[in-house]
Length: 313
Ligand code: BMA
View (spheres, rainbow, N blue to C red):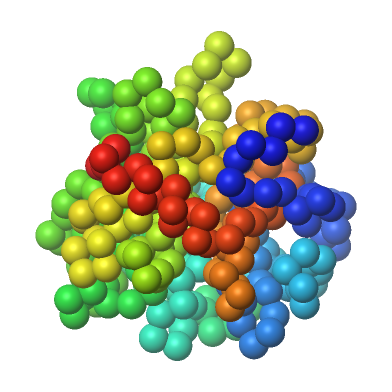
């Protein structure tokens, strides 16, 4: 297999498949990831046999062998304030550890199209929904793991009808409910692998060089959308400033599991873990079917971003 990308696939991929679950499901993919009390936790997107998605946690001692919990973690709200915006499906959870709790950002689907949501949990078993973070059509929302300049900060990806393009934006909040001071952060790049849509994947990771964000980029091909992963470094104090962005993709669909699933040609991440030894583990959904892992020394990923200093924003 061509392994020219910086991220190296775990040799026994996938790390989680539908058959591992205690009831029949269609697929398990796009998972938020966190290491907590010597346990790796994935909060996965599970699609059931009816085509609706919800969230289900799986736990592991080594980051590769995951056992799903006995029951789903969070189902689409069917009543109350949030049912209106997520009663069809909830998708693509990201986990941010912030002020001692876990904040889960995810996409809610309803007749109103897709919105971005945030909920809070302490244990991945019970959740408190907090607010709608982004109006339709909004996806790929991640919270920063600390306040910036005294305010909570998020990246998200509103879509524009006119250009049919999705840029990444940042905005700020005093309370995770009211958001403002929005600024564009970066755009798809003409003629490159990320020329049509981009979106934050894993929540920003603090490094010595800046906030590291693993993101996905999309390009249309004659076979449909091609989803790949890239990396970008944002300024620690002014995270709307791009320090450097990888010119090349860091992971591309080239392995069989990236094709044989519901949506081929897709690698899509919602979570990454930076180990104490400097290894960056990226969990990704392959072909919207299974969860896989790939890794690289974080220094290699940072170097690639810094090489791309000129190709900013
Ligand atoms: C995006 C999201 C992801 C999915 C990807 C590829 O728009 O819906 O959940 O993995 O498309 O199909």
